[in-house]
Length: 212
Image 1 (cartoon, rainbow, N blue to C red):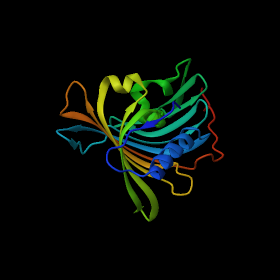
Image 2 (tube, helix red, strand yellow):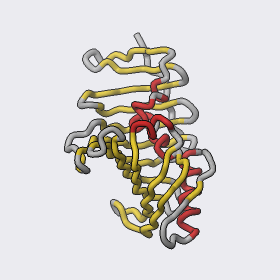
Image 3 (cartoon, rainbow, N blue to C red):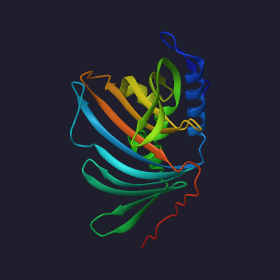
Image 4 (tube, one colour):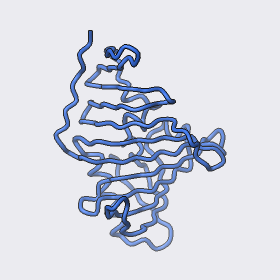
């Protein structure tokens, strides 16, 4: 991850900056984790009631990922191991191999297949530390930030990123995040992504399915 320069407005103490920097570095360096990703398209600042995608998945560094859920109201089961991709054909229940197609790196599927791509920041231009809060019975450190991103694809399509991030108070890794961004070509439209992460560095096994 590139060096992060945090430019904060107002008086923000150094500890929140350091907690966020440490949390981002540890989260991105994790060897494995499980996650949930929910994406909605927005219009006039309001999220659509229908999900664009809703998936749960696992990632194991450097190049293994598995998801299950729905994208555009279509059930999806997907596995990536190395350079080989596998989709489950829903009507037959059979797995189909797409060797040589590393779809987990395709930008259009970042939220579903590579959610940590959204945390590769170039700069953080605003940071607000909201303190220790309780979320679903768990105590977390809450921060609100406005960053610029390293990924040119995300910056090409989206702008005005706004994040709410909840960190584990023990190791500062990200537990939850809410991301909002506007469409550069249609500022009244945009995207809202809600992410949850758990089981960092656990023994997670992702294996290729049997293909007939």
